[in-house]
Length: 239
Image 1: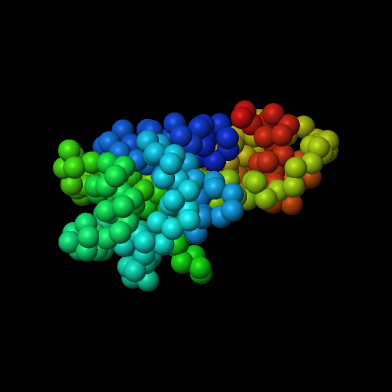
Image 2: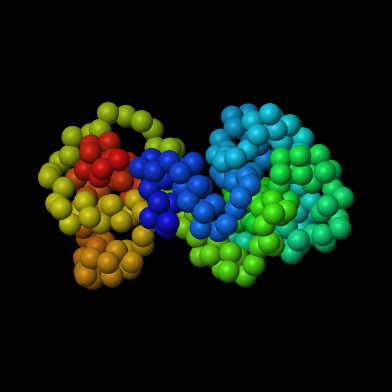
């Protein structure tokens, strides 16, 4: 599942298929939604599974502001994982406009969330829902999502950085990129640090950094992210 998260960021895996896998792993039998940003933007970039499309414009126009959990955000940290009833009382949640007019008509009863927070407040966030037919979310599901959450955050960041690199014809490499350099770039694309790459490839961290620096020079890239993007464009990393 962690590998799929990074593959989705690189366009090698469908985000919808990833959400379907998460729903199965965590036991969600209702809607699953990944918002790569906070407040809905003019261009809706959310990825949704089992969501009534008629409710999407209603959410973007109004209901995102009525989510009862919003009042608890100042108490939460970036990367927090929680069940809605952990931060809002059951009575308050069930009496809210969000639940009565938005969640319940779609068969949603209880949600588990992973959220990111930036200077503007709520940033990227993931929600998985259960219907009344399922038991409440438990510690096992919370632990699983806490394990996946940091990888999801890094993958979304990788996707944003790659999207921000201007699309241009790939520059002709100044030298042949060695197989070990490509291996290191492939792990960077999956969000691995130099230390993690060294452990996986049986190399020293110094050697990994040398390989990455050499690959950047050959690909005429100013950063690791740009080197990954160039490698993808040139077909050095399969996409």
